[in-house]
Amino acid sequence: MFRSGFLVRASHTLLTWVITLILFLHNTDLRRCEERGELLLPALFFLLVVLSVLLYFAVSLMDPGFVLSDTAQGVQASSEEMESMIPQSSPRLRRCGYCLLQQQPMRAKHCQTCKRCVRRFDHHCPWIENCVGERNHRWFVVYLLVQLLALLWALHIALSGISPGATWELWFRANGFLLAALGVVGVFSVVVVLLLGCHLYLVSINSTTWEFMSWHRISYLKNCRDEENPFDRGIFCNLWDFFCICRTVVWEQVYQRNTPNPV
Image (spheres, rainbow, N blue to C red):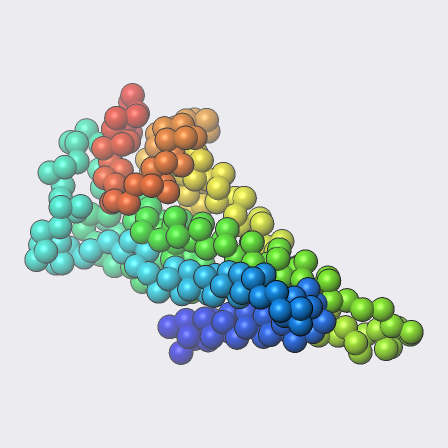
């Protein structure tokens, strides 16, 4: 059950709705809006939480870009796996030593947890119990953005419900659940801000977490200088391609086009 991600997803969902319930039941801005009959803000917050949960499951259950096996390639004759599209002068495709894939596409990496090779591999995220790769990376970034908005709003709502007390003991009793929710939301807010900032930076230079961390150990990057990224087309083009172009990219062609002396 744990390896399939059931416990991780169930825990995330349960924690999300418990905190949401605490914010609605205590004397916060949400509760006061409900009592005054102003339902717009509570409804918007509830919809934002629902959207974040839906995006979480979409990213968690989505195919991150698993590379088809050699047998499947022969059966399906997938155009995105055809070697005839790849220039002969490009770096030789590697053989995966784990799943014995004969031709591992450029920028793909084998994930030890998923036991599969993933296109444009970024990282395996234990939070979603899935890899982040070419097919779901953009949705992972969108999810982080929506999650951050929900967390910051929840942070403001929790602070609005903190009430004074005659003594410290009475104050803790009155605000205990809100303080716990505030602590959890605060920690997650910091984590999501850091993740979102890192991923937006990597997207802007058309790199991945794996490539950024292992630059000098990757065959097609180790001979490039630190400031040379053969996949970088400029910030605006990188962002446009990442968020607006939904297709499988033959990175060997991009590498060949942008590298004067391919290795």
